[in-house]
Image 1: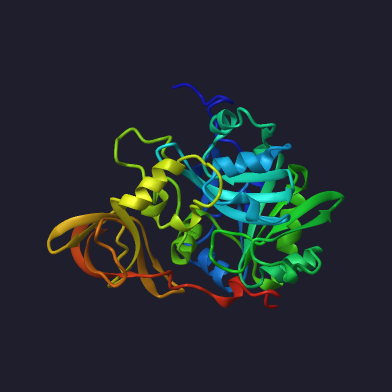
Image 2: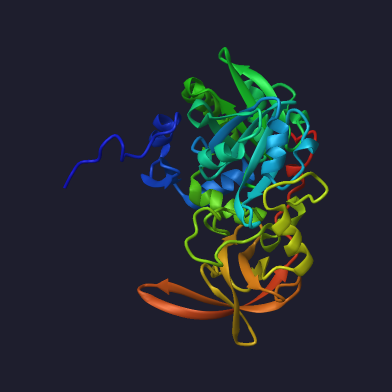
Length: 394
């Protein structure tokens, strides 16, 4: 059997030496070709660090693209469905982008640094697609993923710890805002963004500053019970907060091989991100038709009876399968058994009562459970601190 080569081994993030030392469980996963921890010491305790103190997540594997030039704003406005001109300087906007058929390719965040300079952060690699769409525009698109290291610093005490790090007046930063600082002679950018639905920030530095940033954060946060957290705890938090995940809740249109497996923004509950008042954008004609004629599917949030997560369950109405669950978890803070599901229209209006067909295994024995569930309007977990400005002190 051949040994792994440099080309087949998983990459390591700039924080890997610190992450590896903290990963007591030695439980690793593959995120976009990087080796990342599924869990460090205990998934539930990592989750409660996010909700009660501060949790730190290495998000360096995110794909990051620097977009600049005279046509940068026009280019991005052609690319995504929302109106980029409404994102101010030093602000961040959530966005989705579609193919010509109006099917979602991916979602991500757009950071605006100036009139003609942006950064796009995405889950999927999009080098070729971004290059193809740049034809005819005076714009430069550069993949800077390896030039920027990032940490998500999330939780009630996150602002306090980052202020101790030297991020002055950080408590005045509004949600989706950016602030610029210096850390050991190099630039440090903080954005009030995250994937946990809590008060939190994302911290961006050059790779050379990564280890020192990690060390100082954990030293300053020791009295505030700062902890690292892995992808399993993040999954719990993002489901509780109502966030969608590519390749889990929807399939990126560029990756599918079977017809009918992709979704348009309206079928994912993201119609609010489609702005028909702005100039032409990718998929506009197809989405206008969908808006006029209606969609085939509806994406819903379910409150499921009991405490058995409805992972990969069928959803039924009057004995007929009308949809499937894409994500599910028992969410500790919300004290609710939540599930996301794609349902066939016209099912899934708020208040609709359905049945989840759940299978779970205990001691090699599979049990079938039919759990009543109800469509709810919005995520149950919505802490005021997520939106408060100034951010509350702890």
